[in-house]
Amino acid sequence: MTSSAESVNPPAPSALPAEPLRSPYFREEHELLRRQVRRFVETEVKPFAHAWEEQGFVPREVLRRMGELGFFGIRYPAQYGGSELDAFGSVVLAEELGRSTFGGVAVTALVHAEMASVHIASFGSAEQKARYMPDIIAGRKITALAVTEPDAGSDVKSIRTQARREGDSFVINGAKMFITNGVHADLYCVAAKTSPESRASQSISMLLVEKGTPGLRVSRALDKTGWRSSDTAELAFEDCRVPVGHLLGRQGGGFYAIMRNFQNERLVLGAMAMGEAQEALELTLDYVTTRKAFGATLYEKQAIRQRLAMLAAQVEAGRQLVYHAAWLDTQGIDCTREVSMVKAYCCELVNEVMYACVQFHGGMGYMRESTIERMARDARVHSIGGGATEVMLEEVAKRLRR
Image 1 (tube, rainbow, N blue to C red):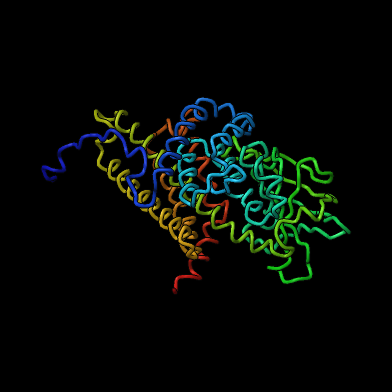
Image 2 (tube, rainbow, N blue to C red; image 1 turned 180 degrees about the horizontal axis):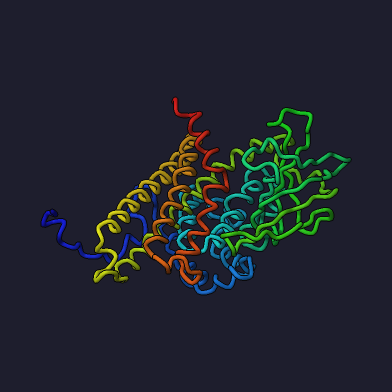
């Protein structure tokens, strides 16, 4: 027997919030950026990105347009064309690109702006930054980060690619795998062992390799389940010679640089995941409030609306965890624990959300013509790339005692 409250079908909401509620974390410049990115996504991504999914990469003119709009220089110095915003600027960019429903487009831009070029901006010499950063920020040169190998992913110390010093050059030999932007990048930030006899944490350096350098070869473009509009490569380095002046930071400091930049990478991926999850919930809410079964809309089924309500609560919790980690970063507080929580929680949650949303779309959710089908494929890699969930939980476990 049900109570009178339970027997009355609730009115269907018009939509979940189109953007995060007013927050003490964001300033006016962040909200202006949010509106600008959202407008770009609606007018210059969604109408065309199906074609990019088919061709396997985002056109260069689109990336240059993003550079013109300032999306690639959010946290970089004004002297190179950047905006000098903080971590919340990166979070806004990632959230809104996540809401595009095209994960491949989002990750193409985010790897370039927030994961690869960071090595040049953070550790490059004044000469290197003056030479490369203006083109990077403008979208004229696109970057890739080459760390992962066939036998080494999150375990960075185990990479085998070597770069031996010969006079005024480093000669690189090895292979890299699953490199986002790897097919069409102009600049590669490459992790290689320059001192294999040293301790593992002090044996790795970062080297800048330009497209077209003899000895650098795209072994193959990789065919993926999701992120179809993101070009992903296996790379081969065969006696690839680069000048000593292409060393990023100090020799032997690469491992620590990678660990430091992992923090921003994982924060950004968490924000992207929550943008995707929010958009998926909104799409599904629109669907279940119009789709009828057994004489009523799906939203009138208590199990469905309560499941959506709980997922909305979890996504809001994940979003606030992202914001808190970003705030800690802006305060200069070590947030490895919180960022690892972000990566683990948000990137598992987005898959939980997608599973439910596909289910509530029924047969249509399994059709390639539906947006939610693509989003579910794209989301799967979130719990793998940038630090697998299991690795993140180990990072959290190490820090449970404060």
